[in-house]
Length: 80
Image (cartoon, rainbow, N blue to C red; front, top):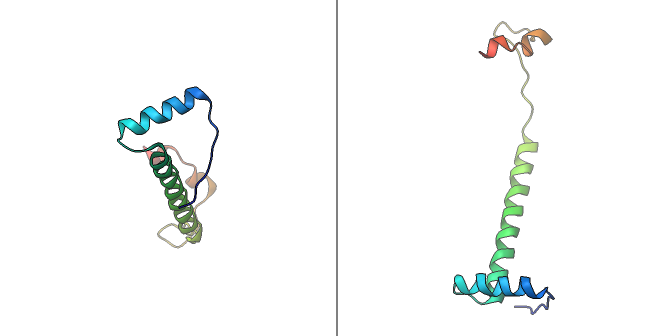
């Protein structure tokens, strides 16, 4: 473990102490878990984005093998 010192406004420090106490954790452990959750969320987003960008775009063709016209692609009545 590495010690890190942070400076907080008094009202924020009070809020953090209360939140940590409500969850029966030390301030240090509460902040570490909060930051770890943020890191995991960011990592999951990065993985999902890489997977999405790796997908090859599908070519749109109608059943008879021809490509759709612009009008067919943007036909709102066809969606109803």
